[in-house]
Image 1 (cartoon, rainbow, N blue to C red):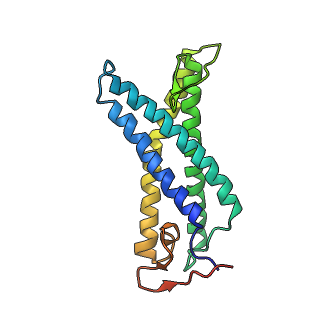
Image 2 (tube, one colour; image 1 turned 180 degrees about the horizontal axis):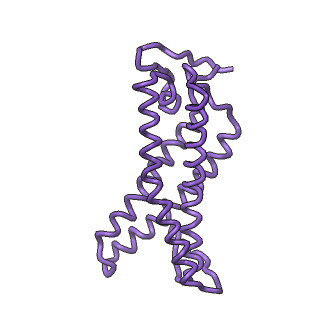
Image 3 (spheres, one colour; image 1 turned 90 degrees about the vertical axis):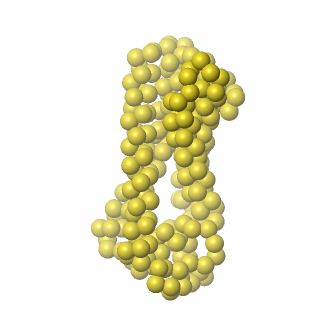
Length: 191
């Protein structure tokens, strides 16, 4: 039985992580740059582009996840802990698919010209600044929740690794061999 995720799943997980960090970093850094400077617009373009990349990679992750069986946690956690982990993963998927969609919709309804990866994007013929602001507020609220969800996700992985001594974290770490914190090797034979 497989004890690690497939390499494509591991690569996508860490790529999404880096893209999310880049998306958050660009919008935070943009706040320190006056709007009159061209760097402000550059960080805005990067934020849009990284955000769209998060959306694309998260959708791809959903399809890849459906293709492969999730490797078992060894030793198996209590059922309530397993269900809580499934709920957290569902929240991560929903949040990091919804946030970029809301960002795009906000820009679409705002009616101003905007670019994604230097490509001009369509805008609504029926501009609605009020609708755009409402969607943007929801986008920002969910993005702020994302900080906490990311932290909780990382804390849960570390809790599994250092307190429960299972292979939850190791399943997503690149490499061929897996060990728990007690030095026991997990076999990596696949069916």
